[in-house]
Image: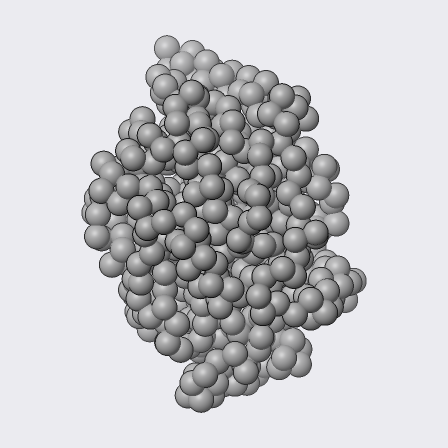
Length: 497
């Protein structure tokens, strides 16, 4: 009987994937136009077009981060989130790599091939042990401390959700067939903290405080406010939390969620989902965005050490470089090293700083550009701000945006809301055409903590993009078209739970 129900669920999701939202088959009737990311570029205040163009060219030439050196300690241990995925594909960086390692280097796939590869095979939401990702690769030898996308040979057996009786359906969202007239949020190569703050003020002025509430939830080490933007009724019965930019060099994710916020505001009155006005949905479910969780680190990655005001923090950053050089974690010049910064201004990887088997989290011994877990969980003001926000109310779901890999991480060892997380993932997997994966051996992450804590929250981590970070602007169109519906689908999910 259980197997029969399971097969019905598999068949149902496969039919949804093939007939409901397949980008080739079924989106034609939605008439979704591609977002023009070039015509608008540079209209935002304070953006240096020549600098952005140079950075785009540099990314296209190098195809990855030179920080992770071939044969380095970091590469050998696969320490940190997506370490294997972000290994550069240049000839010098692939020397000495095994065939299994090389299977994960597919950044050169064109978007159409990447999409086809990502949607092949079975999803962990429906079938355990679903095989390797075409982006990340099999990685079957990864041990404890490996990041998401690096499955372990010691992965325990999992009870996979079987939501056969779920009432979730993926309905047409009509407003996504339109574009925002005279948009505020402009896709640019480096979407900076200052631009984000300016855009938040413009959006509140344009759409009013009844639809958009902006709160300061904390302050970074270098004195930057951490913002929460609430779309919809702050007193709604249901709430979902979406955060981005916790890793510094992944700064296309703040641009993505700010664009999601703008679309929700623009089509608040005339948009609808399954025949129900968006305004009615947003009265029942408030969507909370934290667009840039790590503003100091983002500033370092975009503008170097000169972007940091505190001389004490500058000295910390210089020491990180000295230590990483001594440990063989980098041989790059200092300025180039900073481009690939993931941590906050104190050299702590914020997504290793949560109490989810923190003591098992792989970490270098000293603060670093990436993967250092800190002195204890919640040691940093940025993670403390998220802790306070999470504990401030009951949440229906959380979504954490990262880059890269075109994957959805949905499960974790000890997950107390596995069924609900699986149902949310099944919906988003069909929407984004990203493949679902589990991350049992990557500890200390935000999603992992929220899934195992008291009063646990269903959630996913969505990895956007198909090349190494920082992502070039050319990636944004595909990322937007895959993810523009995510917040609305999550809101509808919350209504049904």
